[in-house]
Length: 344
Image (cartoon, rainbow, N blue to C red; front, side):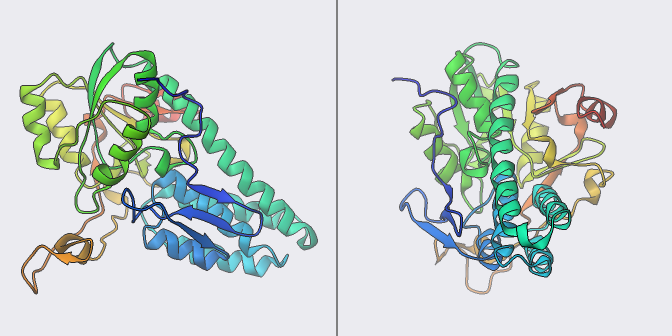
């Protein structure tokens, strides 16, 4: 099968037209390709909260465009109000806060008559930066893998989660093109099934050999098959290098440690939150239990059943082999090395 170029934009999933933002509705994939149009910051906040779009870097990029939409009347008070609204959309992904802080600083540094143009340009630049970060992380990460690796990944840290080719899936895609990835096993990632619906779809679009596994199959696979690496993304990394990612990541890290399999985290520097001292301080989003007891609106549990739905968990930095950022690879993984690589 012909291998598609690494820097080719694989999925047109976020489109800025200057007065609106069109985003691919990820809730409907892979069955239906449908776009949602956002004409205001409130629309962007709703799309983020309702999981029309998801993935920490993409949430940040969308928020930047949401701030640009709020600035269209050249009023600073509108931008400030939009920042407060968007900040409440998702609590865990720190990229959201980074994007809002950045865009707010742009707004507060320019005169109101030029606000709309400046904010639109800043939002476009924010997305372009993420594109570059993706390509750099992919190259750095692929160099860590041995030839013909079989890898496991969790949730969706691909193009659908970023502005470019993805973080974890970007590393996998670069590895596939370089011959260091032979096969990928994406976990289905209950309860929202991002691995089954999104990651597997992306891998198939890129022509990368992949076999879906349920989350509970990972241990058996590590024991009975040759698995050379586990590669995941992150929604927030604490100052001590603890990693917050989609629920189930912590369990995979423990399994990888037991089976002596390298565990790699791929995330841009905007995912690192030096204001949060350790992983236990990261707010963990708890979503509606309906997403656990139902699948696509159909009940799978008894009527009235109680269910937890923690969206994320925290992996202690001691379980992480390396963190790949656009500024370099952090290994051994600890707070001091994280600061050194990110030059903080």
